[in-house]
Amino acid sequence: NAGVTQTPKFQVLKTGQSMTLQCAQDMNHEYMSWYRQDPGMGLRLIHYSVGAGITDQGEVPNGYNVSRSTTEDFPLRLLSAAPSQTSVYFCASRTRDRGSSAFFGQGTRLTVV
Amino acid sequence: AQKITQTQPGMFVQEKEAVTLDCTYDTSDPSYGLFWYKQPSSGEMIFLIYQGSYDQQNATEGRYSLNFQKARKSANLVISASQLGDSAMYFCAMRPTNAGGTSYGKLTFGQGTILTVHP
Figure (spheres, chains in turn purple, red):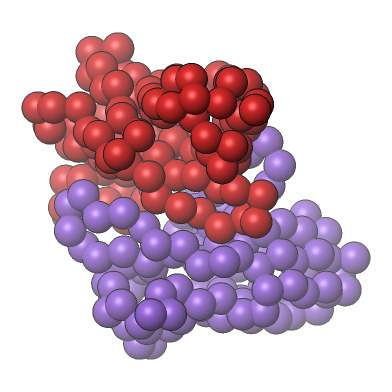
């Protein structure tokens, strides 16, 4: 089983460039989320979705856009990359069940120079 | 708003001994779930154990147990018989579990504790 697949695994961007981090899951999970992990700060929620066509902001949404046109895919868009967006990004999915745990992708290490 | 606090940046334990990783939380949600994740040096996030706020018994999963003290708002992870492969970063996390609430989808993490197991 593929689970949650993130692409790319590594990316270097120049300031001002745009890009999309891809996330796909094959478990038919309703809920999907994007987190960023910075040293000493744990994981912080960027955006999340409770189903196709429904998204909401997390703790640190500025500079990022999301959309969810299908259950399987939840791409994260950086419109104009900034050095402050240098981080490791994780996508996660889970069912809507009360005690369900999130399944995480392998992460994308993004460096903005 | 939810908050998770892990006060131990790093912990050391001898192989085969038990270790407790601390986690305290704060929330105004009446129903919530607490999670522990392991992140080895390879970077992936591995789910370890879950505790619901209304569960009567403390959760256990193999060598992992969760010491849940609701009145003290603590959810400490206990790892028994530590192994070298337990060396990793450990995160405590929580989210509301009252469906329909605006925060239902939001998982909040603590800062993490790095555990080092010595042979």
